[in-house]
Length: 137
Image (spheres, rainbow, N blue to C red):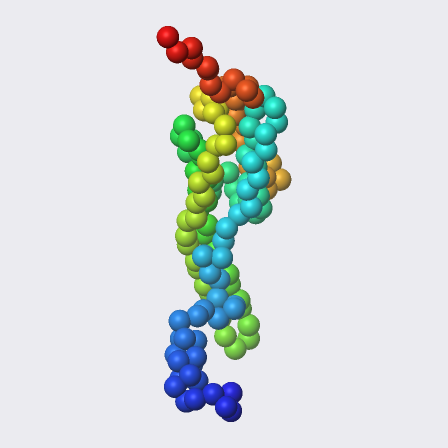
């Protein structure tokens, strides 16, 4: 830092005002892994949501994809001899997953076990049946 101009160091110090400390629980760090699997006759979407309860998860399905929304409420509490600290954080995060093939959303099913949300949708068309060739008259 010795060879850098003063204005550079000041900008860097100013930027540190806009970053959160590592110990601060940030809702924006909460994303979740999603896998989309083609199982032949159906499509399977798996989301890793460990530590959540069913009532914290919402699933909305459209013709083009599925939205998985998660509501998070956390509370931490520390009691020590000389101080007491209690923090709460609330938030919601969601992901949209586009369907790579056409599926029947009316026949979709959802299960949640051991921190894994599994959505299954039967395909409406089999491979190679997406289009029809028309004869030109």
